[in-house]
Structure formats: structure tokens, C-alpha cells
Amino acid sequence: MVADGRGLARALDRWWRAPAPAERLAAVRIVVGVFATAYLASRLPYWMSYARFDAHLFAPVGVVKILAAPLPALAVQLVTLATVLLAVPFTLGWRFRVTGPAFAVLLLWTLSYRNSWGMIFHTENLLVLHVLVLGVTGAADAWSLDAARGRDGAAPGRPARPDGRYGWPLRLLCAVVVVSYLIAGVAKLENAGLGWVWGDELRNHIAADNLRKVLLGDWSSPLAPLLLDQTWVFRLVALLSLIMEVGAPVALLGGRVAAGWAILAYAFHLGVVVLMMIFFPYQVLGVAYLPFFPAERPVGAVGRFLVRRWNGQRSSV
Image (cartoon, rainbow, N blue to C red; front, side):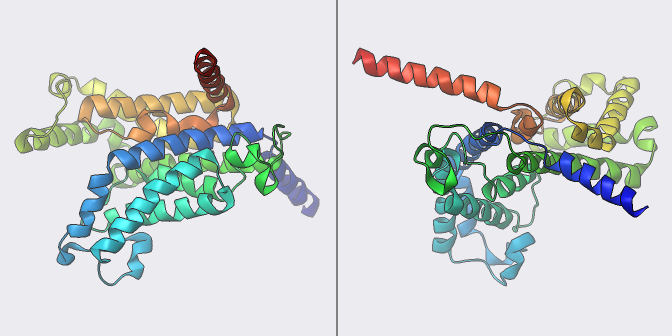
């Protein structure tokens, strides 16, 4: 029995730390970093606006619970600006041993602070968790300024061999995605049971959400009202969404199974946009599912294209 347990532990360890190219983890860092930089910079006035909110609205959540009262306006603005600025060295992999963890912590703080004013948003949860994982791993050992200069142990100009120290962060990034969907599926079963599939839970929820948006003058789905009489459509969507969420752990098997699950999850979010006009940018743009794929291939192709264009422009000057 003990021998079997040790064999299982070794098998799990080999699976968890399966060798992966440093470029694959670096590709995820680059894409996540580009997304985070654009997302934060494009909404900078919005993040800054929380410095001017009334103190009686402050209801700290997460790491912000250490505060008994809101921060001074200047502190909020400086921390927010630092978060946006640190997204750039995180993306470029510059002095990553410092900038990686620093950006991860500041991103967690900034978005938690935003959630501490009466309404909790879930659209950035996966982004924050992925940045936390990337920020404390060897995500800048390749395709980074550190690697180009041989800093922090990275060999300049030479790709690192596939190694388990790059494999387990990718596993963890995938596991974070899987667990988030699994929790959502379990919550549906706890709240509605199989009535989620065979009842009108989803149909009623979509109808109420769109009606609220119409009454408030917000964007609503033009398609949802046309489908409300088609009960079978919503039951099919409910069934597929439940299968995708509860069956999320199969994605950890990797390969085509993981790719198929990621495509189904992506389709789910497109459906949410079409039927409810709710946009999860990290998922809809496909960034959340990048760890399930050999990301170094498309990212490397884009990088080589940009280098050729840059060299071509310099030679023509």
C-alpha cells in the first residue's frame, strides 16, 4: 500500500512538473502583460476616480480589509499609476525578480480596492490570479530583456531547454482556470440542481437581465427577446454550460482534450455576450486560455514578423 502511494505521488509529480519550453511560459507572460497594460492604461481615469468616492461607501474586501478607512486620494492615485507603469517591465521581462512580484501585488491591491466600494466585479479575477502566478515564476527566463542581457540566471541569446520549472507554472495557470469554472458549476448545482438544465432558470435570468438593462437605458441583447419563446434553446445552452463547468477538470489532461474544453469555454463567453451583453475581456479575447496551448508558436511568429518589419524599416532609412 505504501509503495503504491509513493508510486502515485511520483506519477503526480512527473505530471505536475512535466518539462515545458521556457518560451511557452514567456509567451503567456507577454500576452498577459500586453493585455494588462492595455486594460489598465485605457481605464486609468476610471481607476483614479475611486480616490474621490465618499468614505461612507467604503466596504473593504480581500487584501484591502487591512484598512479601516479609505486611503488618502494622493495615495490611491500614486498606487494606481505605479500599477499601470509596472505593467510595462512585467511585459518586457525587465528586472523581473523585482518587477514581476511588485506588479502582481499592486494589481491585486488596485483591483481589490476598486471592489471595495459596494460592488464586487468578477471580470478581472483570472487576470489577477494569472499575474500572481507569472510574477513569482521564471516567466522571464526567455524572450525578455533579462534574458537578452543574461540577467537573473537567464542565458543570453540561447533558449533554455524544456524543464519542469517552466512546466509547473503552466499547469498551475491551467488549474486556476479549471477551478474557477468548476466552482461556478458546483454553485449552479447547489442553487438550482438539475433544474438548471430542465427548468427555466437560465431563460428567466437572461430575460430579467435584459429587461433591467432596457429600463435603465443600458446596452441589451437584440437577440435574446427573439429567442425567449424557444425554451429548448436555453435548456441546451444550460446543459452545455453545466457540462463545460463541472467537466472542467478534464482540461488538465492536456492535448486535444484541453483544447476542446478551452474552445467550449470560449464559446460560452461568446454566448454570454450575444445573449446578455456581458463582456469578460480576458476570456473573450482568448488570453485566459493561452496556457492550454503551445503559445510560443503564434507569439514567436508575431515576434519574428515584427522584428523583420523593424529591420526592414531601419535598412530603408
